[in-house]
Image 1: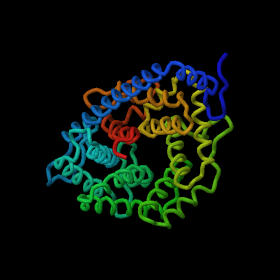
Image 2: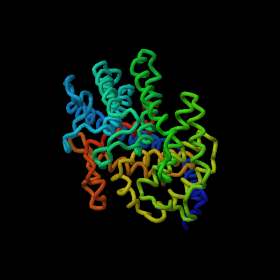
Image 3: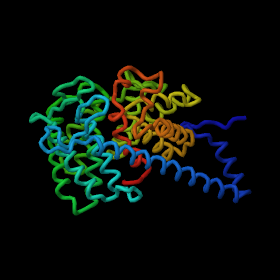
Image 4: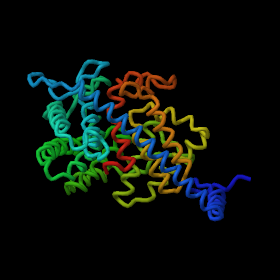
Length: 366
């Protein structure tokens, strides 16, 4: 008979049986731990190799002509333009690999120089009013991506704080972050997902820079209840946006000590687990540019709830991403027939540019 599933999604009877078995055969438990560590190491090495292969591509396509208006940007091989959001993600991946002790790029001066030029390109890409252009979605002079960019670059800033010798790039990034926050304070987020992402980013900014006005703006977006039904479906959200909501809800729950928000995340994960019992939904997560958020949610919730099913889902997502890597780029958004037209329009460069965030989830660089 199958064990009972408790409210957190754990198979409690089976867990007790397995632990009793290992108490009788301790050598089996030791072998299981060694095997798990070995699998994790192999997966980590594959991920590190994938990130480094993308970094090599990024350095190859980065504009190094100082007379070019795109100097420091990354010329997308598919679209032949230097796109600012891709540059943000690539800069963040460069920072992550720069601080990874196992990488051949660890504390590389040449990589640091490229990071500086990339950041300068990002800053030049922002208008005086804080707006930016997102060419691959056709949005010109928009603020719709600022909260996502802020969320990404705050992680980069926290990493840069580790090294006291990086004042120049720290100060430059801080200026850009402040401009993004000032813009977000003056605008109204247009939908529920954007409101949650903005709130999460502004809360993180306040924790770093003690900007209580940013925190107040964030609180104004958290007055309404999260729109999720009893079964665990968010209203008007696809798979990728649901995972993005899960990620920011987890962050808000931790930063503001609102543990009840974790129940929304748990409910959504359990909905996906029971609605797609063979993990078919993982294919949909892999095709989203938000897939690192999804991976982080599965892994963190597997730790919070001691839930092996969540951990397996996260492992499968990462494996699908890694298996789709070809010549330094991920292709699961174009290889899969389930992928929507908007996802297939994303360039492989943009889709792969945030691959470094998977390393943060693994705890390397945090």
